[in-house]
Image (tube, rainbow, N blue to C red; front, side, top):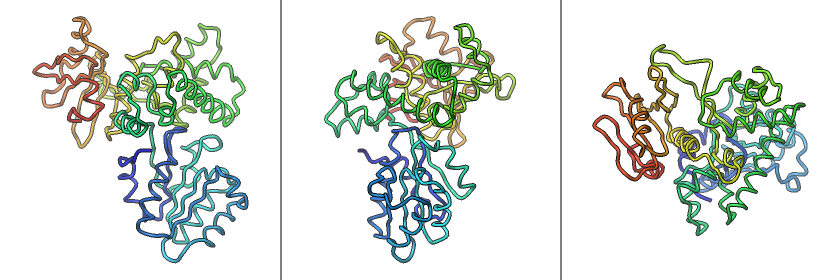
Length: 394
């Protein structure tokens, strides 16, 4: 597995803090590997480390209650600051009490958990201000390429646009095997993490709404528009129910909702937002006859990359002309359009004219899959491959 320095660099400053470190993220994005890499770094400084993996119930069979966690740590630690790692900690009832007790006993506590019994965002509620959380995401393209090289494999941009960045899928050699793995992962997320977790009774309706949302990534939506679409297809769900189900998807880090900002109104447009999948494979496994949605997946991947690189992102309504992203970082603004291709004159005109009226001192970028450079004096054209491989000045 690759060394995920981006996340480790964010967490290092808290290694010795008494705040509980929560490693969150969608299922199978690599949370446990990040936890392992933190352990390896700290093991170079100290032997005062205690690790418990509650997914291995044979090794942890004697630990049944939260008090058992505290007793085990106290029995196996050394003096001074002890580093405690609790993987899949939600398996133990009252786990939050154990974390609170340990931090008062000169312990630096790190935890991860699967969404099957406690959704990642719910960890924060249990610890009420005594924590700092770090969200791990599936691989971006540079990480995926590095892992592919370790496996003596290749991973093209087109492959990434379809099958995304869940790490383990690269361990399967054929697209059919990868799709099978990703489909099974999707079923686990939808059934175990959401249907069972929330006790959803209208399971058929829920699955259809989830399918519609995940295959509609990178599109403007409102709960009412989704409800209207479903009702038009014989599925009776109210906007309130749709909004509740969207919140469930967000709580498991399956999707991000991104607000839209209106230049004309100078405010956020509250009635409609855009949805981006945590991984584009959640769209692709729902496509039929290999008719993959490369256009919307490409926008989704650019969004994921911008977030990974530390940008805050909104969708920008430029007086009725939508700019895909207003990306802000270090007080600098970059307006970003994404198009699979601008070879056709009509498409070129639409995409470039969206920047009309944007201040000249702000950076304006269009990202496409074209090889020809379409840059103008005002707008910088970047090839998708260059952007994903960090060759674009972002």
